[in-house]
Length: 557
Image (cartoon, rainbow, N blue to C red; front, side):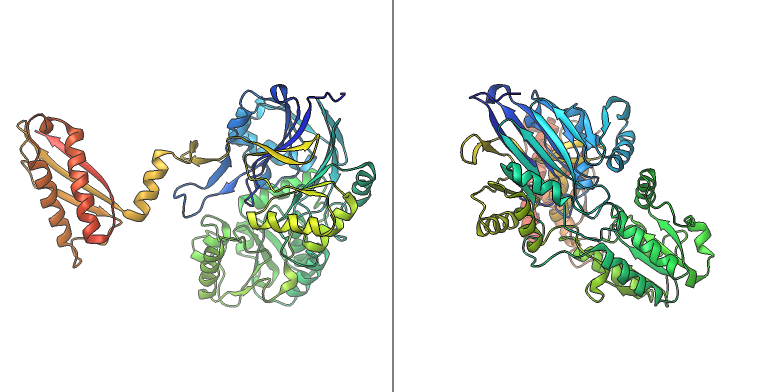
């Protein structure tokens, strides 16, 4: 395809810039009125205390409606890169392209969503290449904390972008090949217009460290312990799982997998030729009666997730796995920011059972990051030599610091977009030229809702202010003919507390509010509900410094 004078090459993040997770990146080529797009990664992030009842959050792809999408290219199989496909593919309806390990997990995800037979999935070999309209995309082997991570060389008539995906430099990756530095250096020789690059560890000096070193540390630690051992790690980190399994076997232990993700990822790994020479896993039932010194449980839940295997073990509710005094739990994972409290509670519960805890703080060698530190970033820039640095995959402070690092090592131009910022990469200097709609959609009750959804708003309000339920009967003349019952949920007043009289006070205020109504107002349920709500919210503000949701039930006799 030849370039035209009206053509532009643009980058547009709809997720993953200004946050860690929920990656959704777009590359566009052509004139503004007739632009063609490719999508790179379609990921999720996870709910927290600010989103009660919501476990999964996905980027809002509304901008893509009506646009020409040539393909969806997946760099690797982490949830923050593929996890939203089941929810969002129907809004894009473009072919998928990924390497074999990622394809295996994509198929499982789409099967669960009930749309597998609707989706065109193209399996690309490692180092493969695809043509998507004005784009030629070359897959470049990287190293990361999952199998088959890929960078993408995205070629257009106006220049080439290196989209790194998630990566690190690891000379002993355990699983897969080392980073293809020759391919990146060749790109640099040809000329890289821009590099869109991972910023996660930009504040950390040095290098992330090698999985080979982790294997040595785990082998030494596991070999020194007696009693049952549980190891918590990210199921997606096949190299770490492989290291734990081989460390266990070296110390004469058999491995039992605990958690659905562990089984899914090992199946994916075996489907592409990994983990072929390890002993069969014991079922949880078999492991239950295995000698304590000869068993190791490989568990999900290292971040304190409530329903994961380690949390159920800590609560004592796991049907098969029981840990107690003399047993051990190794956390071979980092603490994801925001999970500190849940992990702390998990470790406290295990400690109460007499289980000894091991983390990277007291045993630094048992975990390394999957993202590049500052020295690795400098090396990547030395290989690629881009004209433009576009930091992504990080909070705002990460992107700004990454841009400063790029400037310090001589990159001519930097730009740090927010989600929704359209960056013109060529022609001319890099610049943010437009802002498009972006945002989040919440998976709530099995359906997608907006950030402003009424149900979530009410749930948030109730979680901090509580709920009052008021019920009474009225006759046809509008006279209250029963006691007024007021019940509180999530408020400090109840029948047996010193504030229990507050509920009686609220009943009197509700009655007074209804008594003030005259004529036709007494026949209008909505007017009655609004009057009671206003009166009780005002009273609750005085009593508890809260404005609860007020639900009024009127029974007509």
